Length: 165
Image (cartoon, rainbow, N blue to C red; front, top):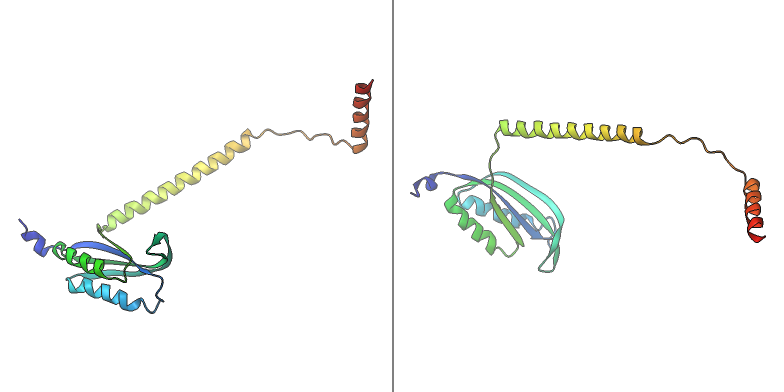
């Protein structure tokens, strides 16, 4: 039963890297080409971000830096393979990755936010508790009596005199 796949769209994310041998102006036609490929395959772009020029984790084809471009779009699953092949065949794209992305509801976003706030509060409480324990554990030292150099010399002379005899 393939009929539901013909009509339903899924939400995807495409991240691709363009080599840094191009300038910021020269990558614009490449980005337009990939965007056009998404639209030609029936996709609707919901987010388009240029993450900028970043250092690669490891060299790819003697390239050490690249422009990271992120697109989120809605597309029918049947057209995904065509899009993947189009991006794969583009010689100006070093690497690419398409992942299916779940759209979060406002309730899920609020739950994540509250969970992060709760974790932050717990961490702050642990830090305060650790600081208080470290203050309690630190023994209070009595002020040591300062000894002058002359007194030290006298004591040293006495010790050495006893050893010689």
